[in-house]
Image (cartoon, rainbow, N blue to C red; front, top):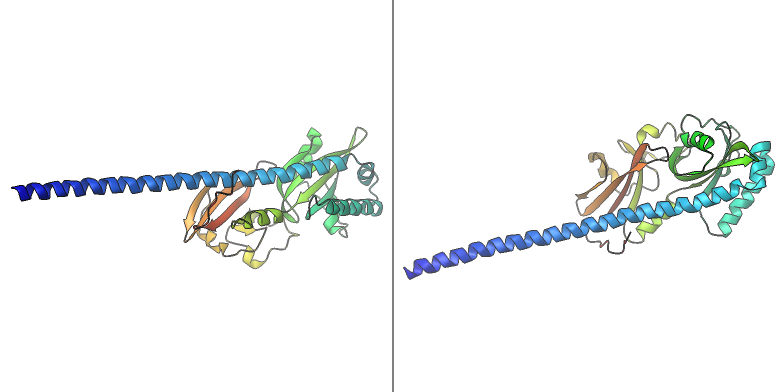
Length: 282
């Protein structure tokens, strides 16, 4: 009888011990999951803040340049040679001030044509931008600057656009264009890979950009760096903001909504499971 009670007691103790162990492990897993989610939220906030910081500085650049008599003369008189010389001096000054290593200047006429792309100034086509650079029309109507991500002939960039006036007459816009290279470097130093994916339906707009075959995936094109093994996203159907684990790596993704409110792609961040995200505070 005593032996039966002993075995019954032992069995009950083992049973409750297993339950406690199960609940403990579940609690630990829950805490780890919550910590990971908080770190991912901080990572997304960091991304948002870095983009906002870049476009804020870009906008200041565009707004200041829009007040320049030389820029006003560029768009009102449309003398390419004089305008080009002035813009090249501005570019060199920005480089010396280390505002951006990779900033580009683009002037648009009041009828939404490209006047000068400083990185492609030998192009005299004055191509019509009205069918896809919808921010230009909004700026002409509102007479206020705009900033954000938008796709153009040369690809997807962060853009800050300001209207230019000769007295009260609208004569066009000036734009500071910045790519994502600095963001690549910012995240990479902490072990995180940053990708900008553009929906392939917009490749016809970005027809002056050169994307290698390895950068063009099933539904997206990587616009900011090499694929680095990101080809596995062919198997992923991105929806909204979320994350998943692929092998030993985490993948965090969030939609890119452009300056006009259109969903044009995804920002994707990847890192090794062993990496701590504690350095990202948002």
